[in-house]
Image (cartoon, rainbow, N blue to C red):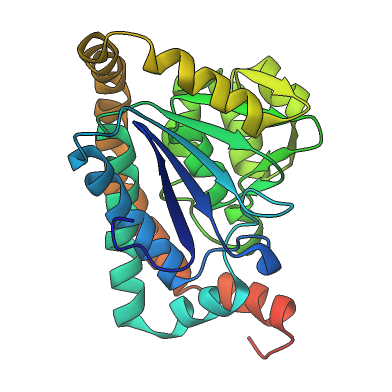
Length: 255
């Protein structure tokens, strides 16, 4: 559905759309096809006039383990691919901020890097008790242009946003709920997210969508204030020696 790559499955159940990140053998780590697919997904979802609510989750044991190491190394060495990825990152962030319908994240396992960003850009978040969030860009020498620094200050205190964005430390599910980064911690996030989605389907559509838009105007304005600087900074750190050294350690290559 929506002409997505195999890495993203979209299933229609009436007015509900179930979106599944689909690289389970790689813990749904992000490659170029998945990243570009996410960039094109949100406007297509918004343009689907039959859609009224979406649930976003991951196949298998993880929501998303972050960037695939092979893809990250390609971004380090391929300027054209990096430019494409930076543009796609911008489209992912603004596409989610502007998405017409509510998006409910069902965080079934670790949500790291871009996975963490997708959770932060969702409208409601249900997390498994064993799941965690993490934005470890800084740990490998990168700026998280589409990540926690953009959105976390709207969800939690600036001090807490700084702590976890600067250190890249894991945020367990219970802590994420305490901080305001998740609505609910549950045994089965997909089941609970689907219950919530069906409750939303029973509400007046125009009122739901306009209310979401009012709230997300705050998000969009905050994102636009920092996004272009963040993307430029990320591009520069992809070319840094710190990142090259980190990738050499992760892949066994030479920095």
